Image (cartoon, helix red, strand yellow):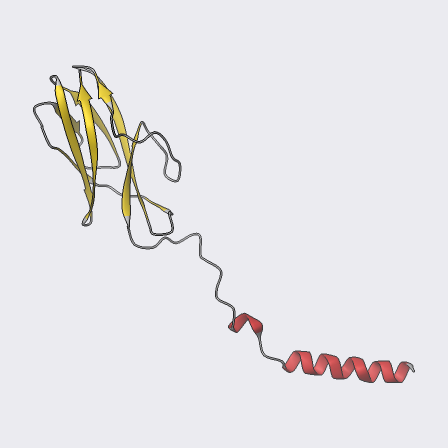
Length: 135
């Protein structure tokens, strides 16, 4: 009886070791350390760290002479964060001033009363921050 069990065990291990490697047929696990190409830009109010979320900058209100900090980060099609250094452009530079005009974090200063938009662009991908109110 013991000999038969030994022979059956040998046959089982022989066939399983010669069987097809299943790892070759299964798709690889998604690599969380690498991101895909830039799909969109997110602009947040405040200094939001890469990979975190916060209040979106649309509808931001600033007093005349006041400042607000805006931060941007890219996202790929799988919503993974990408560090970017976009260019920031005000639609009405007489209403708001952006400093610096390139980088992931900028300061927006209200110069005079009105509304403006900010275009944020990096490597051909653009987003518009709408309704920056200066009161």
